[in-house]
Length: 381
Ligand code: CAA
Image (cartoon, rainbow, N blue to C red):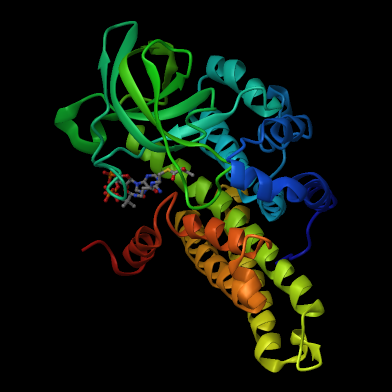
């Protein structure tokens, strides 16, 4: 077992850390308050290779491994969790499925655009009646020979309003349940692609989240991803990979919350000394450190397994479940250490707490991660 990062992984971590500190963090609160989509910052991240960090160089990407990806998402999320999720989704939920299941033509057409950040990608699985029960799809893609006609509604789509290309799970044979679903690559410019309600969120407010309506949307047949009937399995395997990204985002939010509390605690005097002198506060920091380290080890193990081509669904679920839970705990303790000041908008602590919560919800709630873990141990009941 080797716990040492490679030179390349460290270079990615340090570059992302510097960008997060110097470029992202100073305006993260303003973007959150005004719900400003980080267009300019994403343009720079595209140039740095962070929009397609695992896409091979032959398709314009940086060709790095999943541990480098995880380190990058953690550091970027430390500066701004909204940018973290946009990058996680475009890298793992859009670029990765095209790389894994796409035809050579699909790779040539979409990967260079995603890798450069010229296009942002998204993923559409959730529907009004299909949340945790993701198999209950209704969006119907009617096979018309050389094209599909898609009708339906997708909910809570990250980068839905601002993204360019999406991996969309659709029903193609309603008689076969989840085995009658297929995955389509749908561009926002296809006729019948309509951006519906733009959501107002509790946290990660600089990332957009929208409802998408397909109204007789015309999708060319060559945009079928993988085989007919494989849509649900593609979606679930893509989510395994996505969960490593969300676990990394949760780590970044947790580190940001801990660092903010440290900075405040060291200069906040009560009873004639910094509050970090008191054991009640010191022990909180000890627990934060340990939890973040344990979460990072779980996340990097899942990333390593993925890079070896070994099964990693359970390990990714475990990493996402644990890191999202500790991220909320740490962000909550961060507000507590700030006391009254932590409840106010003058400090970033409250933003970290608001940002943390979604990590326990998207890409499978904590209850769904526990369902996956329990099934792997006990079998399906
Ligand atoms: N990879 C590949 N195939 C898989 C798989 C995986 N990880 N997990 C299961 N499968 C296969 C099964 O083997 C099964 O195949 P067979 O029928 O051939 O045996 C098939 O898929 C169906 O599996 P299940 O019977 O287990 O499916 P289910 O209907 O019981 O659902 C679930 C399982 C785990 C609950 C799944 O529905 C799930 O993960 N739900 C959560 C959905 C989710 O994460 N949504 C997130 C939305 S995206 C998002 O949040 C993005 C964002 O904004 C940031």
